[in-house]
Image (cartoon, rainbow, N blue to C red; front, side, top):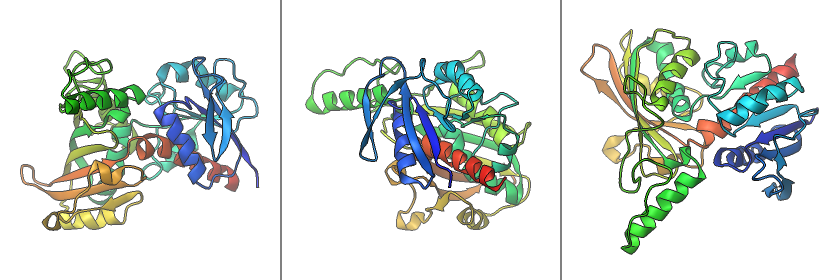
Length: 339
């Protein structure tokens, strides 16, 4: 069996480190793993499966001989280095927003649209974390009853912003518990501890944020529904890991909550946790550290003819980023193996 050389770009960041963890857990036939990051981190060492990986400067790195490059270093790094990796023969899965809306680049969630991988040209985009978990829950609903309209409100953890945001929430919380002055925010525009911020990324002229626009456009592209009405409100909450969402769905055909539960129970990548009478519903702590999308509180929305509401939770660093990218790689390698 062929053994693959994999490079993780942005390996010292939260998503990059999680990619390395997921690669260590799963059954990819790996030969060599290379860690890359910016010059600031070059020379550092990261343990992977008990062995040290020396971090390479991605600006100087040679991708010749790399079979698969997983990019987790942000839009600038992806725009600068992903095309070079492709030119040098690597198959690139990019976690940034740099290529997501490029019509020539597939935007893939393996449980939802793996067939889109057939038209890649060496580069595949990994969707936004909040989009991934929502479409995993939406796709089986669409297959059963058709989607007419979607509205979503998110409750997104600080790990989605990165290591400095995690540290900011820790510092502010510790200061409040100790009775000291609240440190001024550095990462977020306002204090995040014991607060909620209805802003993720900059506002556009219509009052939507960048995160909200991503959810709208990416959902349409992944599901192949170019005209699907989608309304998103994205909120940052003082939770360390895992994103939560309230998703309101209007379907073309009737679908009862009971039927929706059955459909979702049979869907790949989903676990239904839905018995409110017994206090059973998913929370961020339940989702942390796993790769499934948890769905609960499935109920009728009486404000529209065929309406449903559901509560969707997933680990944003794993299924929302690293695991989805590795699953894309697994699907691609399987296609290559059968070719």
